[in-house]
Image 1 (cartoon, rainbow, N blue to C red):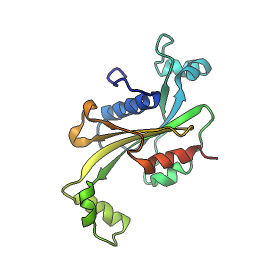
Image 2: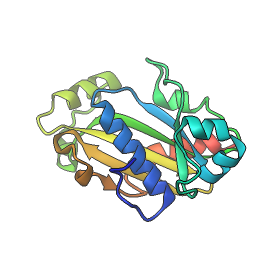
Image 3: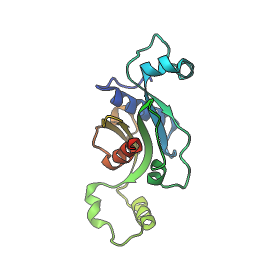
Length: 180
């Protein structure tokens, strides 16, 4: 993607590429799962797929190529779905992009106790300080992690926060898809 800023690591570049792709689809989208494969290996072992993905031989051969997977089943909890995934050896990592509502830490003290998950979600959705956020989280088999967060109210490529520890729970769930 031409607008993706240069990043320090191939994993960060992949996360930003997926974030840019998701941004192009707009908001209110379902969660999307991506396999991450080594670009050079993909070109060598699957030249037809590489060509289909627009990976020309003249392009940079280092890095990771995100490949979007089939749609995540609607209505199935994300943690249950992730528990069903097993990746082939050619997949060196995976990424997930998902939209959520979040509250600032200052709102934690005002959360009513004893709410069901559904009632809590409703309470958060109605809270005046809620923020809509798109999270893109990626992990590699070797344990490396990275994430990108984009707020709906600041939807701009220059307003994307990145870091490996931004969404630790989701990163753990993705890492578990590589455990045998």
